[in-house]
Image (cartoon, rainbow, N blue to C red; front, side, top):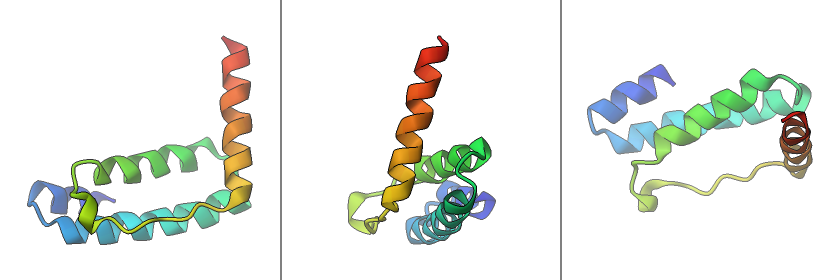
Length: 83
């Protein structure tokens, strides 16, 4: 993702999308194995944030496994009860 940040600074959008997509693929696989590792969710957020300034035409849809949708919802619900 560091390289994707460099590409973003240099306005090489296609490479930002490529690097971020590869990072997301790896992070999703890791989160499927260890969904309780909060650092994986943070890194996914970082990878998605890199895509925010990129034109929508360059961004390829990314499918998140259904299992991770439920884990994320549970984590968000649990955090809201702590407050």
